[in-house]
Amino acid sequence: MQAEYLRQTTVALATIARKETHRYLRIWIQTLVPPAITMSLYFVIFGNLIGSRVGPMDGYSYMEFIAPGIIMMAVITNSYSNVVSSFFGAKFQKHIEEILVSPTPNYTILLGYLAGGVGRGLLTGLIVTFIATGFADLSVHNAWITASVVFLTAVLFSLGGFINAIFAKKFDDISIVPTFVLTPLTYLGGVFYSIKLLPDFWQNVSLVNPILYMVNAFRYGILGTSDIPIGTAYGIILLFIAALAAISLFLLHRGVGLRT
Image 1 (cartoon, helix red, strand yellow):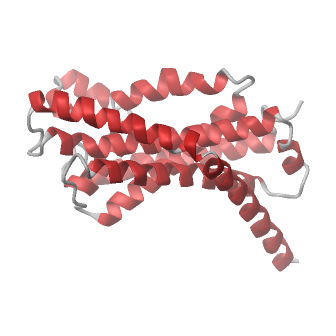
Image 2: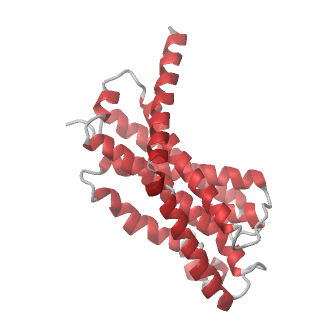
Image 3: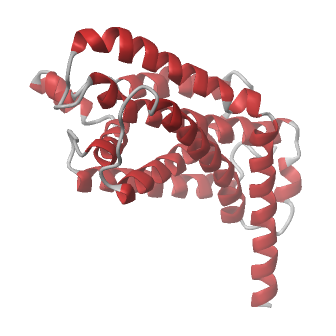
């Protein structure tokens, strides 16, 4: 009985994950090409044009300094948008009900959708990293920190997209959080500057922004410099993942936004 349950759960997880992966790969011109073009423009405008006037930051050229942050922007945006659009689409087209009435556990549904979001986030991050090497001389300072931070960040924002999709009632609702919450937090998360340049008050305010910890941890993995202690950054990231995962499973269990 236990073996049969495990087999069914594994098949269900693999099926959802495969469907989600195929979804963004099938329309790669819409899912992978636009972020590559957008991030290239960031490198050209902020790195080449503005960076030459800014000068070095934390002992690195401005282009090298912003490259990890721009890579993380791509990972954050794409992991979030993949899950929110896919899960809300499943709600809107009513085929999510087929999964809900099946004996598939809630954690399997969640993991399946996370697989798509994390996969797209990591693949986009890899593409942007390749582009970044054409603009800056990047070398990995700590491979384990680099890989683990980018993976955990993709998981975190995939969970955020999942929660957004659960509460969304129309297509406009899936763009509210990215526009009014995610974008400001990303731009204020130390992507284009070191918070050491800010007055003490604004440095303390910046510490409330969770994206600051992810960007700085990833920058440490690439360059070896960070405004935030690495242990603190990991603690914040893992805390948010645990909280959002618990909320996601609770909402699935209660059928919030899914049952009429």
